[in-house]
Amino acid sequence: MRSILALACCLLLGPVPSARAGEILSLGEALRAADQHNLTLKALQTTLDQADGQLRQARGLLVPMVSAGGTWSHADHEDTVDLGASMSALYDMLEAMGIEVPDAPDSEPMVVRQQETVSGSLTASLSVLDPETWATARVAREGRDLARLTVAQARQELLHAVARAWYAARATGALVAMQEERVDAAMRHLDVAEKRLATGVGLRIDEVRARTDLAQARQDLLSARLAFESARDALGVLTGVGGLPTPGDAPVIAPPPLAPEQMVDVALDRREDVRVARSRAHLARADLALARTGFLPGLSLAWQGSYTFTEMSALGSDDRSRWTAVASLDVPVFSLSRFGALDQKRAAMRRAEIEREHVEIQAGQAVRQAVRDQQTALAAVSLAVERAELAREAVALTETAYAQGAGSSLEVSDAEANRLAAEVNRLTSELQAQVDTLHLLRALGSDILSLVR
Image (cartoon, rainbow, N blue to C red; front, top):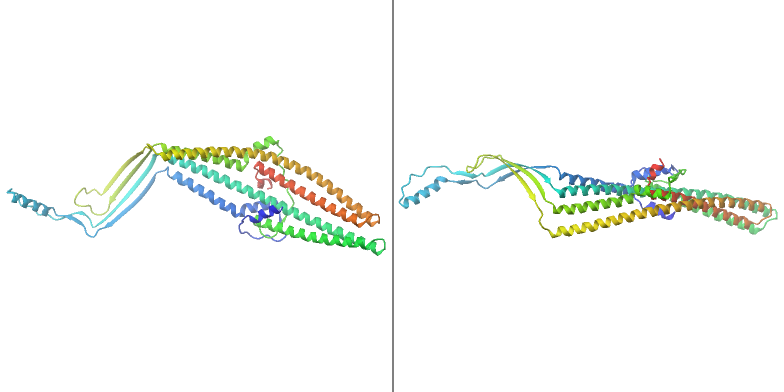
């Protein structure tokens, strides 16, 4: 019980309105509150969102990509060429060689680069053959599935922890009722002892013993009430409702009427840890396939168009628009690191397969052990109930005998102590049977929230 309360106090929960002291909280309400307000689950949900984002990012590489851009440049001055001056120098050289040439034509300097240039471009690309990107998208999809299963596993662990804490709080409440009955019995015992002493047929030691039993019973009642308050406080924190909720009536929860072999088959289909292990094996195989794509060729297409908005230079074409189409083929020839990565992924896949097989074997063993534990707990409950009934009968007989002067107060005290021990044993046995039933349902991979709705 103490470990259950410690687990309850360690989990983080979201801020929600506090419950009123003494408010009745059923098991279903406790489970739904924890399912809605637990911060640990909310944090895990963000990892699922991240996995979805990674999958969309990987799939985005498979569709055409389009980008646009613009360029503006400003130089300190424009670049010009004076062809007339250049021809004049040539003519002078030819005349010096005695060659008669015509007069050099007059011309204006030509601009070969503008001082300011503004242009725009549009680029589109598409991977036609890209095995690596395809494999990356598959890895991202397997990663998203693994994240989803991990969140589901954490959710079930939380819900079962809440259920155990709820039953623990209910058990401490029943213990308070037992201690109150003990106080009432001790008061009756003291009343009889005082009357016997007053009439001269009793002993002083009987009265002292009765007062001692009453003081001890009141002390135990106080301890039980404080334990009940702590259990309720822990339940309020764990569920997120706050305050000091009081557990209501226990619902009837029973495992399916199946043979142990059938239960193992059900567990292998439902258990989150088995599904997580299988998902990890799938992810390892996808990683291996991704490593193998490093040896495959790739083909991509690209188209780029540009347009110059400013005046074109005097030299060259006056066409302001240009476009270019490019096809790129990438053929891996040799890379030693790729072989190393392939060996690493193969080893990781073998390990994931071994872990998957180990988890499946453990799941089967856990189901069979949970069945045995529940059967043992149910048998213990029957025996504890019978002992408690006999202990109550023994108390009634000893009290009657003592009141009639045929017994001693020591016999009454011993009978009452035995009754209390029997009642506590019955309560503990019933709680253990309920917890073992939860363990069996957990071993089967059942959603406990769906069982109490």
